[in-house]
Image 1 (cartoon, helix red, strand yellow):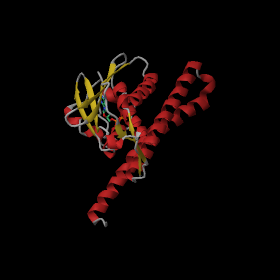
Image 2 (cartoon, rainbow, N blue to C red):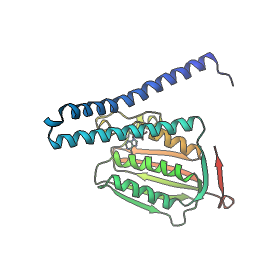
Image 3 (cartoon, protein in one colour):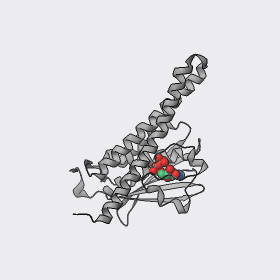
Image 4 (cartoon, rainbow, N blue to C red):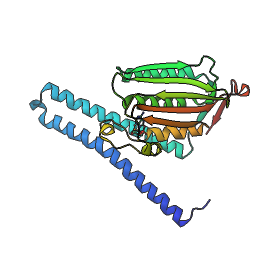
Length: 250
Ligand code: ADP
């Protein structure tokens, strides 16, 4: 397919915008790492041990921010070039959700995590690693956009009428205004408010999450108020023919 001149200009502009956003996202943590490393090198003897530790922790935190950004960019690049290998298997969701809760619990020690589930939950045909990545993104958001000590509730249920499996992740956090709900799934989109400014992120998580869910023929829905947010992920239940099936798709 050959693009028109207008389409080429739009693509080129999108490319320029992308490079400019990525450069900005890289420059902020890099400048901070260089600044604190410089201070440690030039003023090491004048700093107290507490100051040295504080600066080293900032360097570590900013390096983690860079690693997350680069990992997310690699995922976006693989998704856009359609080079992402998908390995579909029929699986139970509960153990995947349990493993995600274990990982997140280690990071957010004061939050509570509750998982309610339907014991007859059907299996779904899915790429397990991608589902884990999706659930980690949403549960991490549910935790980081809510106060310490609050509860994140995960409900696993099914809709008997349309044969779907529903994973709901509900938090008691800061919520998302109605006018911003559609924007949160865009690339590099972050809601700018005094509350979100204090929380680290690069605005790629939900873009990656939605793209992966739709790639696996699922849907994502959000409901939010000032009391918190609920993200629902919906997948078709596996059919008896899918059972034990492993499908590989690029
Ligand atoms: P980020 O890296 O900024 O967390 P995401 O793509 O995961 O990026 O989310 C996009 C934006 O959506 C966030 O910056 C935040 O403003 C908003 N958001 C996502 N999840 C929640 C949530 N559970 N509660 C409140 N706001 C949220």
